[in-house]
Length: 181
Image 1 (cartoon, helix red, strand yellow):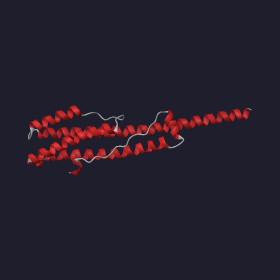
Image 2 (cartoon, helix red, strand yellow):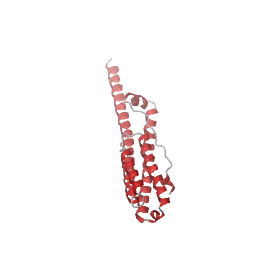
Image 3 (cartoon, one colour):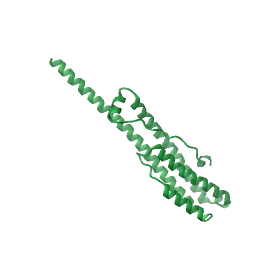
Image 4 (cartoon, helix red, strand yellow):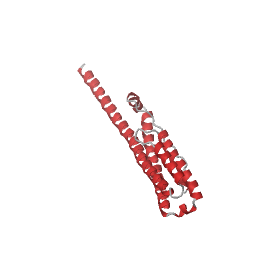
């Protein structure tokens, strides 16, 4: 009787330790995803700042268009955090893409803007932030892949269901005009 009782307790302790280990691993994977999304948010914010700086530069050429764009961007801009979804990020990238398209149209109208060194540096900065965002998206998707694999594989999936860890969405690369510089 006593050996059976001790064996039962040992099995319960081992299962509990395994469950704690799985929970810790899932938390780490979830935090990696949140961290990657936060990094994207920081870089996206820097890209917005560079875009607004660029628009202030274009005020000398097309005041009304620049002011309208600055107002639109400022009102539609949202902060991307670790809890943001891929759709939130896509909406923010769409705002940037629309603004870049309108700036491109302005530069076609005002050829001297293309030769302005400050304008060129601002466009380069936007491109650098775009590349950093692309790299962070790869890191995010890799983190999502790791969590999604763990959540789907038995027996970890049992703990994931109990603790409400779910599959996360991947970020999808969008083609932007700044990519085609």
